[in-house]
Image (tube, rainbow, N blue to C red; front, side, top):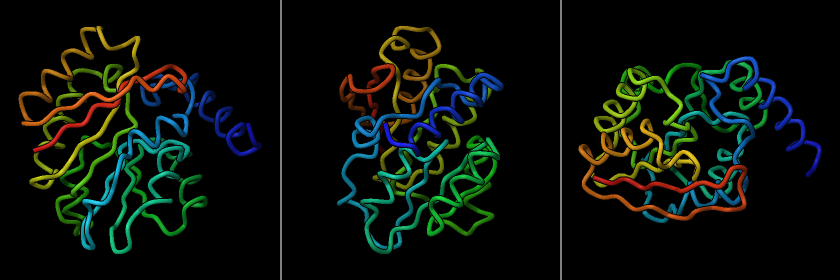
Length: 198
């Protein structure tokens, strides 16, 4: 592990200890999960936007930045202010918003961003309070462009949990396509990638 990932892991774990409800994970996502979660971007065209929920210390953001097509915009929405400040320094060409992903529709309107073709989420939905989970699911379904994709993950150990099952049921009621990828075993903990489409 190089210095930067180690520093990120320490910072991430510290924020988890202080605020487990808002951070929700113990360590940043691995590069293997990041690759699977971001997926192929060849369907995105100039003028499209990629939204990232909960970029944290930038493990998934880094992958997006590496392969983001020319002319495709990016906006990361992050609740933890210390993460936002780090992200802005690390990715000066990308845009970040300090706030809740439950407000995604309002954020898009305020920033003049059209409905995105891709939303990638680093949030472990199974750990979110019910009302927040509902707000994010509803807002995501309305915000995503027709033909777009929403990509998120669930940890393997959380898959059978009632909150995880509830999230999948809510998404299934709002999206017509669903694919489960993985598990990505080279992540701590291992995780499935869930892909929803309209």
